[in-house]
Amino acid sequence: MNPSTQYERLTTLRRNQSFDSEASHASLTLQFQSEPIVRFRTKGQRTFYLRRHLLKEDEHLIVYQVFVDERSAKEGENDVAFCRMTKPENGIATIVRAEVKEAFRKKGIATAVYDCIARDLERAGALLWPAAPTKMADAEFKMWWRCSPALVFYYPHRERLGFEPRHEFEELLSDCDATKFSRLARSNAHNTSGFRHRFLRVRRWLFRASD
Image 1 (tube, rainbow, N blue to C red):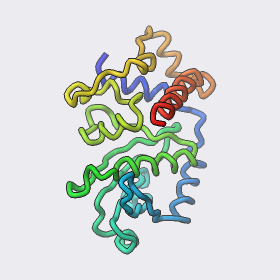
Image 2: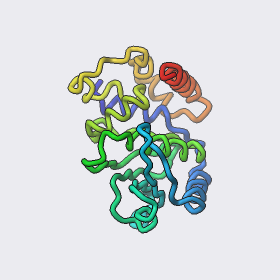
Image 3: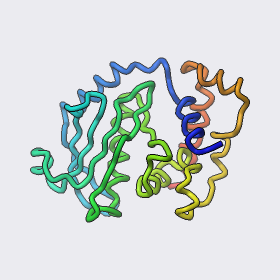
Image 4: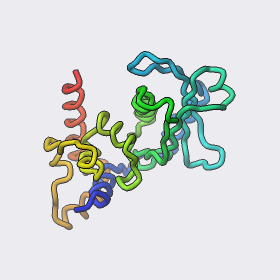
């Protein structure tokens, strides 16, 4: 099974057909209107400012921009990093494009922004999801590997970048016959609870491992 097929399988299994998109979008809009700019610190204790807003040119996209000071953030000029993502649909929001300017790379910005986005989406009842394997750059892969290896251990970047397989996650992508997969793909929130349970178990394992 190629990485793209595996990605589609995971995405299909994780979708929640009962997800209330309107309520989730309203929650995000309220967050952004009440606090459009938030200050954050990287693990290296560097302070940056994150501007959050809906993209005017495309109502389906959310934009996070990083600035070195609050004035630049308010003016929306000279950002040092950005992340564009889709609004949550079926419980999932996917990153469309992300970039950190070269002078600001390897400073923990991507990881800090990921954490902020994940918290925002959690409050809106959604989950942040990685891009498809063929669309993920090396820097993005490394960030996802640190934050959520359960979702990226099978990507083609892994071997080229020298990462070893994470066998503890193999069950998330174990082969199943077409009938079983078809049934899972059509399942509603109740039927996908088994996958969610495994996913949450993996997340708990990750948190314990990082302590």
